[in-house]
Image 1 (cartoon, one colour):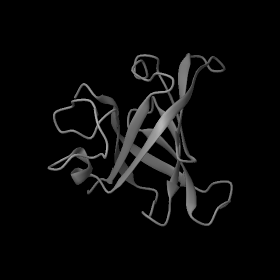
Image 2 (image 1 turned 30 degrees about the vertical axis):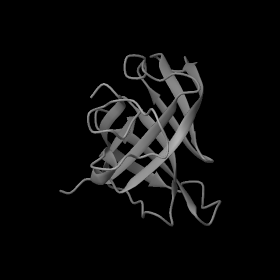
Image 3 (image 1 turned 60 degrees about the horizontal axis):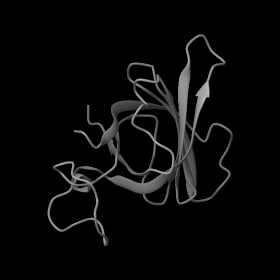
Image 4 (image 1 turned 90 degrees about the horizontal axis):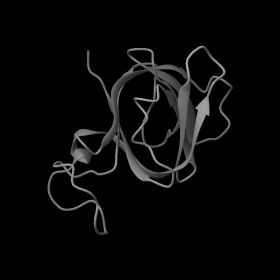
Length: 146
């Protein structure tokens, strides 16, 4: 879908690796199945239990099934939306996009704030080219069933 900036199966490697700093927030470290994308994501642990399992993670500009852009609020619209297929949905803003040249390959690092919950996504420039500064996005998560 055109509105998708990221749509991959991710594997959570660690939850609260540095210890739990907040009562209602867990920081997860994850990577995509192909190993090309590393992710650090804060999750509201009151809303969903996060464990070291596989999840489908979608980052999109819209929740509309047809991919059309959001033009009015309140949002979401009536009827079926992408939110119907996911358990955890947050809305946020891209506040920083930078380049990481510390390793052998150049990576783009995208930072998104979801009302204080943070996402850091580090990946190949081709996988991150749709992310723009000050862009509003939805992050959707669903546990994968084996």
